[in-house]
Amino acid sequence: MLGFYLSMLETEQERKRMSEVYEAYQTTCLFAAKSVLDDDWLAEDAVHNAWLNVAKKKELLFLPDDELRPLLITIVKRRAIDLGRRQARSIAESLDDTDRIPSSDEPLEVQI
Image (cartoon, rainbow, N blue to C red; front, side):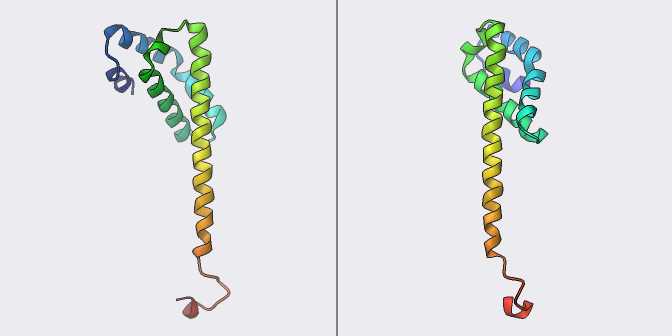
């Protein structure tokens, strides 16, 4: 995935810094996402969305590390919360679809 994020950057300096930041904080970001979400796949999606955000806002890469780390964790956690809400909403909507299931009180011939 790093190659994808690097392709979004224009200068060699940006790509070098992105590589450094990614290598330094990828595991931390994934841990932060998993602390919010129970689903590993959603956690990885949250981290991916966070890295996309960083690649789009290149100025974030050049923040001092003591500012960048907490900012990355905040971005990841917010993305994880957003994905968790979307998943919960999707589950709620699919549960609403159960109203369309025919009642089992009636014989099958009548339901059909």
